[in-house]
Image (tube, rainbow, N blue to C red; front, side):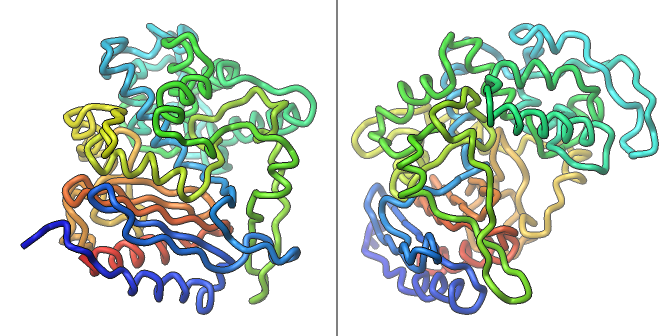
Amino acid sequence: MDSKRKISFDKVIRFVDSLEKEVGIPGCSIQIMQHGEQRLIYYTGLADRENKRKVAENTLFRIFSMTKLITCTCAMQLYEQGRFQLNDPLYLYLPEYKEMKVYTDRTSDCQTIVDAKNPILIKDLFRMSTGIPYDGYELPTERQITKLFARWDQSLKTQSVTTREVAKELANIPLAFEAGTHWKYGMSHDILGALIEVISGMKLEDYMQKFIFRPLDMTETAFHWERKELEKRLAKVYTTTSGQLEHIEIFDGHYRKESAYESGGAGLLSTLGDYMKFANTMALGGTNQDGVRLIGRKTLDLVRMDHLSKEMKLDYNWDHQIGYSYGLGCRTMVDPQKGGCNSSYGEFGWSGKAGTLVFIDPAEELAVVYMQQMLPSLENYVMPRLRNVVYGCL
């Protein structure tokens, strides 16, 4: 039987329509490619309800943490060039991480700080085992990072911090735990962006432009944009309050041309079709149908392997990602039976804070990109159901 036969994805359209009508997502879009050919592209709903602006081909989305996959790909390009080893201590490249401090207990009550025994390894940046979380209030480290975030947000309204400066300031905060002992989602990929800058000698966006965006003709993906473009094309973020959709005002200062900060963990804007150019290339093993190569096939296999220890897996316990573990900057399917998933072993991807998400499956040469702007994102509802509907069409 021809594996490249045409497949109907009409069930996907019906499911996406239900997200607007039954779940309350104001507007979304989806694109599916398989074997390097487009199988489906669909837009529905509004990007801006107040001005009746529909979701369209040129709609810009805050992809937030889907930025991570591109940042990690950039870093793995440097890995392929022999510029670093995954087991190298981070301080060999970013010397501010030479003598780290760590809290002796992960609980919020303990304030004892000691010298860290374990150096942060570069692989810890990829797999989120550095002990450097996002902002929050549960852990002492999170509370200190919360204060940093507040100061950085204020600086973006006047003068901007740089990617390298962010990494240096994070090094001054004691770790939440010894590196390599736990998994904790956080700022690791922002630090990875700084590592790319130091090793390559280029600003992060300049590197991405030269080695990812221009080769793939991704003209609609960037960290910084003209204000008129943002006002005209950027989808608004919505939430539901008492059953009614409301627009959330989000400060987007770091997307403006004046900003110097390029967040390797969450900073890119993109369109549905532009991000698909990247996802499709990865689905084809790192080299697309036109011969554009991002990384080698064996390197991609390494990225989507399970990189968590038994202890780390206890921390990676998000309900909607049962069946997945974590690779080098991505979720990766390791146990379809446990998760009740019909996707392939090694299917990988990630999601963004406002609900954008990507599935990449080299075994099926399948790439799925979905875009929306909603807080909370309802990812625990959308992600597993959308995955199962797509794979149910194969």
